[in-house]
Length: 202
Image 1 (cartoon, helix red, strand yellow):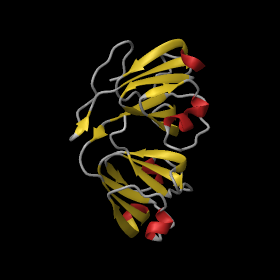
Image 2 (image 1 turned 120 degrees about the vertical axis):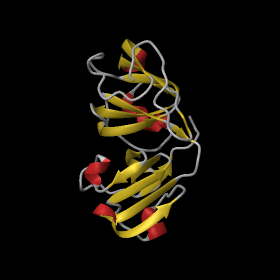
Image 3 (image 1 turned 180 degrees about the vertical axis):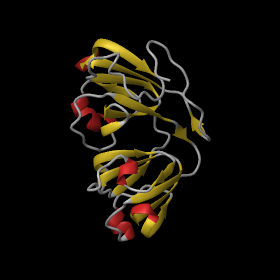
């Protein structure tokens, strides 16, 4: 549920904390009309003409450039973000984005158990396969694998990055099977080179 002026819990997830609250503002520096969310919101453009800044009061969220969780995205944890163009560096997650507006967001339940993800060299779970249970700052160096074209997220929530050392465009991956880059929400030319668990840091 996405709401205005109230706070509510998101749907429960196994071994996860399910409470969050984020406030979006039309203009930079927390100016203009505001809109509150406590869980996923696929499109809040009907409530705000644009979104230029936000405050995360609790929990972790992914913010998306376009409705329906599309376009560039950035990870947000508790804190203030007065300017979306500088949001990546302020979030402390190193990913870069050219976003200057946000149209949708996802709440990230905080996972408490083990983390497990299988990455595959080719689409439809083909080619080399490696199972990961911790962060990987350079897929090529660790696994001698130049591409990741599909994956199966079995436990926990992850961030995938285009470049080594958790840099470049990022992609949020929640539990599920992703047979190709389209399933992941990216174009076929996108390559991922580093992976990080979303841990209890919100």
